[in-house]
Length: 225
Picture 1 (cartoon, rainbow, N blue to C red):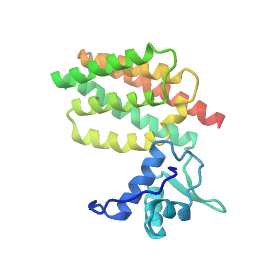
Picture 2: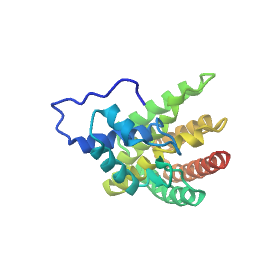
Picture 3: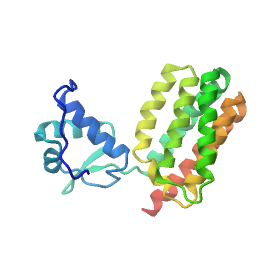
Picture 4: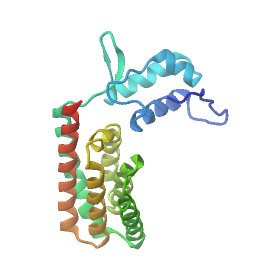
């Protein structure tokens, strides 16, 4: 967590409970809190300059969404996915992302293609570096963002956004395996190229391969924890 206290702006109209919820969730999503880490109400209340009530409300909300859980004698901890949960999530993700990618390849307009072209260039540039940086895993979300918008299906995008937000909290785990980040970036680049070029069947198949590889990496990393 940051060393300096957080100062909430008076002009911010969002209720404190919602700001606290977003703050904790982002800390989980960004990997500041990792699987198994304890979240201590008292420390958070002091850090965020709030009472413990909005902290409790936020943690209850996050627990209902699966981000945290309450354990005997440990209190609230960041959730750790079971292998069964990983398989379930990635099975759903494969079906939804494959559909979105196929639709995007058919429906992408010039703006979407230009965005994908720029991302492909960024990935190629990053892959040319001898050492990849931690933030390069974010290409996953940059590619998916364009594909989801290009798919032209708001309901599908909404479902993927909800699932992706959950995946984002744990995605760093699979990328800790040697070579996985580079391989994932290559997979995202190939996806983006296929969508940009309107190759729907290829884009769909590449997406299925990518999600399957991501699942295997995640399960392997989970087994090593």
